[in-house]
Image (cartoon, rainbow, N blue to C red):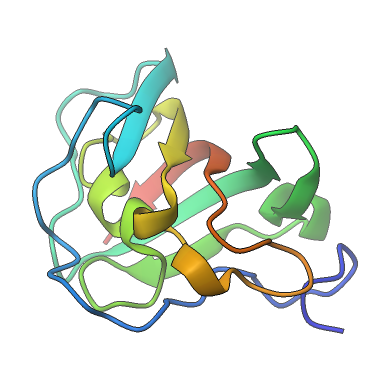
Length: 139
């Protein structure tokens, strides 16, 4: 089943768009948006831009720490194109603030994740999501 930890399908489809997915990053976790906490710096030079394809490893958890998805568990990095609505808004916006090689914790408020509908049965409505992300490459 989609969403099970042993399902090879990534769990990051984009919710319906209601706003520009590339609006400015907000760094205050109390506000709506995405907060980025760098755990290992990247090259500081190669930042993804709209239209580029990124490759990343990630583990996604709810605020209580329960894991809902991980590319590492599947043994295959996740790829998507920036700015095309293929992922949640927090990823489109957050990844553009990261450079290749960077490891970071992205904390996405519900409006930058799955919002009031969630992603049943794995992600409850209005959930703040936390992703441990490693940006592996940009093309």
